[in-house]
Amino acid sequence: MTARQHARVRVSEHEADISALASYLPGTADVAIILGSGLGAYADTLTDAKGISTDDIPGYPVSTVAGHAGRIVAGKAGSTRVLAFKGRIHMYEGYSPEQVAIPVRLAHAAGAKTLIVTNASGGVSKRFCAGDLMLIDDHINLQFRNPLRGPVSNGEARWPDMCRCYDPELKELAEHVALEQKIELKRGTLAALLGPTYETPAEVKMLATLGADGVCMSTVPEVITAAALGLRVLGISCVTNAASGIGEDKLSHDEVQKVANDSARKFTQLITGILTRLS
Image (tube, rainbow, N blue to C red):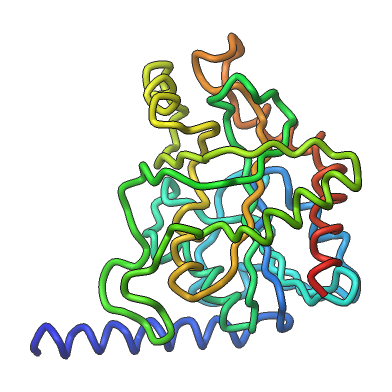
């Protein structure tokens, strides 16, 4: 088999996999949202909701991280049809970038034109305190992996433009809703590292020098895939702790979940306000 024939086989198999997985989705969508650590409760606010456990979808990667429920919920926020992924998949769990991006391709298959990505992050900039919400302006990919590597799937750009991968109009809408609801929403650049270790103080200093305001272990593969598919993207990060060397507290996933849970009310209020205006 030639390299070109092999590439065609890989593409067709990938498309068949997404098509098969999409047949299990509980509904179609205008907007998809991937809910990060401790933020999954938002899906419970959707009306007319139907859900499925990802354990019941053959071939779907299983999330092994506390705070990631592994459930897909279809429902409504106002009249906007929403597909919510409660719990994401991470490369540090042993998955490939392509597997991490499966929810985005499923969202696209379900009809979504907009993707909202959320996460818990460490604050690199001293402008941020635990519990702050950060509107993601841009990102720095320090995971050094790309979900688009390999054959091009139908409907995906070979060389996506990442200049405005976080949609300016959606960012403006998010700021308008935050102002209206008296929610403080800061803006910043997000760096993504592979994990699962937290960053060293020296690494955090490097991130600050590079211009990062926050750091996470996720999100970027999803945003890259969304850009290739032509989805509009909005990113919101819940800053759950000062990054290593910025604060004096020892970092732990339990604390990340706790702060994210404590921020759930304003997070839900903000996301609901945004989604209802997208109808």
